[in-house]
Length: 364
Image (cartoon, rainbow, N blue to C red):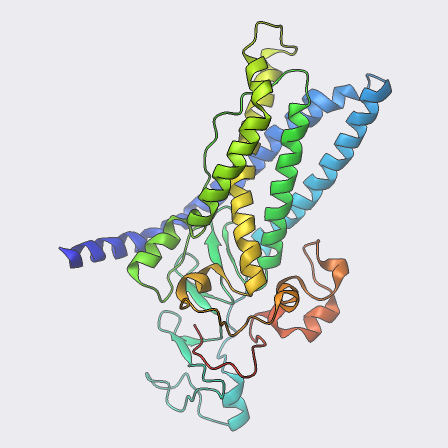
């Protein structure tokens, strides 16, 4: 009975390739939420307020400037994640140790004849699906059907893997979308009529991949690697937002007249609830990834590695941050890297990562 249960879980996990078909739908859903929000904030409420004159016009102008600035950064970051290759293994890639020693090609032979572990005691890793060696921190994605450099997870919301070359863009999207959506929610609550915000729902933000893990861990990743962390923060944020909006909720059901047509009211209500749900789910995911960046680890590595305070790639919070965002502060909050950082920081290319010099443990 136990073996049949394991086999069933494994067969279900193999069907994760079907997630590929959800990608375009998810992009349209994200753009749909952006469109509804734009209509509610700009066309329905603050756009017309520009012509009211006085303080109302000034407030509307400032709100629209900030709103459009956040919107540009959000879309820039989002499509950077969607369109940027997360990083693939170069053809016939070999560890640097083999090239220096002139050893035989590790790709020859089923048991990789001639392959020796490097001095730091990292073991050579091989992908039998791609039939190639895997660089450090590289994992195979069952959805994309290839190995991805420093893979974090496969995200159906961006139709792409999140890996070495687009992880920064993904984090910026999370940060901008969560702050931008909270800003838009606050903007909508300042309207003359309130919105009902007691109902919210959790939107999944990631799906896992086929990596060297137990079946249980694979199922956890498939359901969403951020589930355990995201639920707590969603609960806290939902409680705080619900309490802060309680007066508006009560006023919505009061006997007083609510300005606006049914159409504009419904659009504003829908935009508010959608942004509330996205902001809460994304906020939990963002907080989780901030902790991962601080430790210089990925979602997959966090599930794979042993429970130990020591981690090969933990270089300290400042250097860990630079391994993802680069050293040039001018580029920290835009989805791009400086040419100098790309030239002098190999970790940004996804093939080589600095580690503690005296650290002795196996690579995951």
